[in-house]
Amino acid sequence: MVVEFSSSNDASSSSSSRSERRPRHSWSELQRANTARYPRQLVLSQELCLEATEKNPEPTELPPPLGCTMGAMGARILVCVLGPGKRYLAERLCWYLKFFHGMRCEVFDANEVSRAEVLAYIDDPDETAATQLMRSNPAEDDVDRLKMNVDVGKIAVVVGDGVAWGGTTREDRERMRVAAHVKLLFVEYVGDKSVETINEEEEVRYVKIHNYGETVIVRRVRDYQLLLVVKYLAHAHPRKRVVYLTRHGQSEYNKLKKIGGNPGLTDLGTAYARWLGESFVRREGIDSTPSRLWTSSMRRTIETARYLPHPLLELSSGRSWHQMQHRVYRNLDELFAGDYEGMTYDQIMAENPDEGGLRKFDKLGYRYPRGESYLDLIARIDPLITELESYEEPLLVVSHQATLRVVYAYLTRTLRADAPKIDLPLHTVIKLEWDEGAASTPAETRYRFSAAEDDGQQHF
Image 1 (cartoon, rainbow, N blue to C red):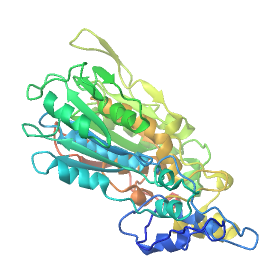
Image 2: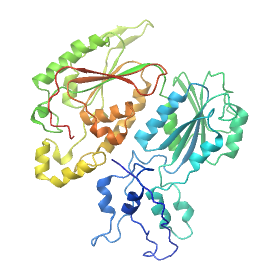
Image 3: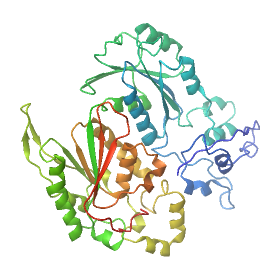
């Protein structure tokens, strides 16, 4: 798990002496004080490195920021998604920002809450451990600057229509712009007649989206966090979609219970590849209707996809479609185990039991020596997600256990701290299906080719 905690104790000091200005509380004390309110942002295995020792009496007081936990970098943002029926997209946006960027984001319905209630959420003081430590050890006459940009920030996404506030009219948008003490963005889906369309003469930040990404107009948006919002909403749509996830067939290393490496398939793994390409896709009807295929760059996934059909389909629109055109992404490669590539877990524990213990303690944040962590996987999978969200055709992803755990966790709204525990057996296809405009959590069906075997990677 990854955690960030707070304490209600006053950790400030006014002395100008470096030794006297040190905070009364260490990171460890603050992070143990309250685990409920801020449940993220620290790789637990780094905690001991923040304590003073004889060798390092003046230690770094804060853990390093991670790419997938920096969130809104202290920003306070209000996003108004204009028009009816957009809560589904707003909730998906918030989940994306939480899962891949660690942002604190909530959706509010303007028909149910007042503007004051939304602003109260945004203005609620940040009491994360990072903020408390920065405030407790200020440079002289520079306290205000240090209070900013050290927490993950907050985003409120407002949906709703036909109300006295929420930005659906030009007058209300201007009133909100003048009064705003937060970053304010309006999102208009072109063609919605319940909204007074945004005019380019208005002095507000806005994005106009036509036909869910066919045309996107962006004005006055320069901030990194707001560009993330625009990027996601420019790709997301509420239409029906299907995603199939499967690990590669059994590899030679699976048979030996080794992790990592770039082995080929066993005879059993090849039999699974044949079943996938010759039987499963035909049964699902994705051999003859426009569909897509992604694999990692590793030998075992490419061999698993070798029997999938790739005919040239003639569509009713007159266009041609290269069926399941093979797209290879290194972002989908397996978690890199560094020094432990090609080893079994028994060998790892025998050679270095301390490292094994650290990984069990914090499987999400632990990084293999000269290797990767699950947080690293989250950061490298992020660029693929907006493309995945834009697809309307069925997508088959052939990848690896750790990588698919992250993808599956995101798609099923599973907390990323729980991603390393997800059960994804070999020789199983997971079908995730969203109906048009339906709930954000998909319907799930699992298809198994053969009984799961112990591949030695349950702890990977």
